[in-house]
Length: 392
Ligand code: ATP
Ligand code: MG
Image (cartoon, rainbow, N blue to C red; front, side, top):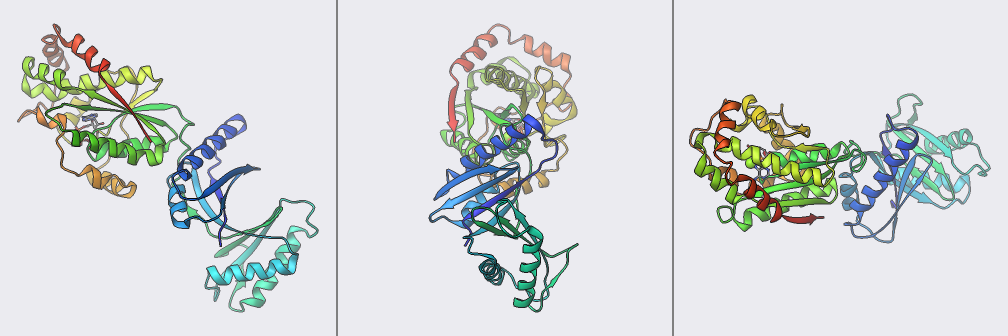
């Protein structure tokens, strides 16, 4: 019965030129999301509204699910579209629609007509009154409430006539592409995919960097990160994923530096390399899944020590989240099941039994002095041999 969707989006703060960009980005993201849904869709804009027409057969639930992943959408209204055969026939259509979609007994309602086609011979107020009367006749248990109706029945008169009353909630946020680009440090864990999702929800395009350590980490561990990137891309749109071979850098640090400082020093090199790719690809920030106190490398002192190598801002959207709250989001967005697959991570392979929890920055820098001989060359090689995957 629904062949069209009306898309509602937040309008606060979008005026003038920004409004145009916001709507264009939203249309692009809608088209991207629907390109994976079986069926033919046509998206169009008019007077601050976005409509999607479904041509031919399509799966309603699948379409709604895809739209619920498009940031910037606040509400999805399934629309019944009917031919204009005069007011009486419209009354019949509205009554059939209500009978099919609702239990009208005891419901309060209001009819809201919008005459987008100005040549339509009857004024909106009159259409409201006429349809209201027809509905009361058809459903004696229903009543009108103009202030707080349970059911707002929208009737839009265009070439055809659009009837809708349901608003399915969208994800909110801003359309990806309206707020620049950031580089996500994506591991195979639970946290970083959630962090990427959250930043992307603010309209930020994502790229990602993953560090692996073959043969200590397997091809399967890498595949898991590719899978996670693909799951995040269902929301964020395509992600350029940089896969960095970190083995030689890790082995060198392991040979030269105190083992309790390994994780911190490794983290600092990860940030440096991720920032290198971020700069190359015009990103404005780095994103990690860190959260205060979660592990030794995420104490306040450790975060400060890691942060110190970066010149770009580092966004840590999960910084104040409890693990369970992060897990809840991971489940909601569908990354959790993949994240908990048990594959080795490069950080856990060389991890010390008792890592420092309060690293002293001067001590760390002194330890890094021991790397001067080879580290620049190793970083250069890691960058040059990085594999770039376009994740759709
Ligand atoms: P996650 O669940 O995201 O892996 P975690 O709880 O395992 O996080 P850490 O391993 O300490 O925490 O990692 C902290 C953050 O550092 C991650 O959220 C991620 O942004 C980044 N990170 C860690 N390991 C890697 C890796 N191998 N490649 C890319 N980024 C990484
Ligand atoms: Mg991890």
